[in-house]
Length: 608
Ligand code: M6R
Image (cartoon, rainbow, N blue to C red; front, top):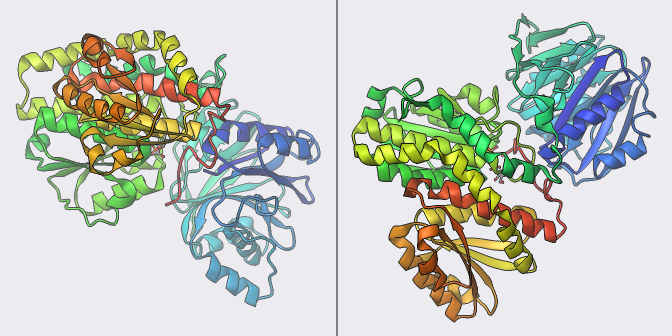
């Protein structure tokens, strides 16, 4: 969602902020802006649209001179995307300018209070309310004014603030939305995430809720909202600048698809010791044996990982697993106690619903385990236990390598829990471990065959409606195949349990409709093929995805075929997801879509 960058130093701020905002584009946005202090005034330039429009409007930042400033990319929540509603917002007298990520829930009451005291508002946003409130409390100290305002603001927000009367300083404030500060050699920063500043520094501190950072060229000081000074740890992040560029590929998404073998290898390596899935440093064996149930809670693709994990954990470890969308979990009165393990899955570690669901699970007494990609993120910090996926920065909005690494972690969990509880035979365990060990190589082989998928995508990119069908893990994987296609190609598609089609949905099948039948799970392949034949009989064109050894069998019921190498059931979705990602990618490419930044979507969803 919205991206924030602030800089104070010896160089011109605007070009640095524009560059930083470009690194945050992946978060999703519809307008952008800058506020720069020239020592006397704060000058604002902002507009609707992409950063290229802001570059043009500000003459690449030259029209706003000064070494201190804040920048913003906005993803509209309160008020439609427009020049006026873009950030930064300024107080009526122009003294305070702020940028904001999140939602101020009590903005209407505060606005009414300020209007009653004679303040006039220009925009419909909650952000302008915060700017005016800070100005209302300003009596010569921006720190004190921000502290007073922070005690009144409710909701989830990160704010970046600049004050014309204190031209050397930028101030950051955080509550349930991410904000880091970063220590550069020639100036200091704050930002929504490390990506914006990694070109200049890898040394950062993470702000906690209700903490204020006062950032100047010389130092960074931290305070509570009651103005007690606090010390914060400096952390060195291990992301380098090359991981934030496209590495010669046309799109981040494609680069990230190709990075999956390495990402999976990096993620699982620390947890495979002497040929065993070794998670005792994360989950104690005695605890695993006392478990009565597991919940997996997540959103979007991370939720889809959970759906596959349910099948795998229940199959291998015989523990009941419930998979719940994080936005539902919080309000469904879940049956959770201390014998429940709640696993929260998130790439960004900042998804508001997942974070709140995790907090709810903790409150109910469960042990929480987070599977997270971004180190130091809110979900990672507030979980009882964490397993980091080592996918590296994922910039395309459509997740690929994070999904694959999350899935690999859940296989390790299934194996570990199964071994602790004695529910898996030694031979089967050894076979899965052997295949897991060579998984990165197997993924490479599948990626090498991308030309076939590109050809099929070319044949089908004009479809406007399609179905993905499958059973069991194949159905669970279809959910992800369908989402990938929808989000980047804007084709309407639905994932359906194959056996459920006849209960209503088959009425939508018409001549030449493409149906993708995922039929890799040997035990149920015949059942899925019967359903494929049913849709074929009604005119559908069926593309099958199956394993090498099932090829000739599946070919009989389908019009065309994609194969993956044979594998143990629990590993099949890890393989079959690659053709589905590639198919979505190439279809979107042929349709001329904005693949890395699909319309209306944000990479990290930090509001409910
Ligand atoms: O960062 P998270 O994994 O918590 O994000 C959850 C979803 O927003 C995310 O998986 C989304 O569905 C993906 N962009 C889909 O590709």
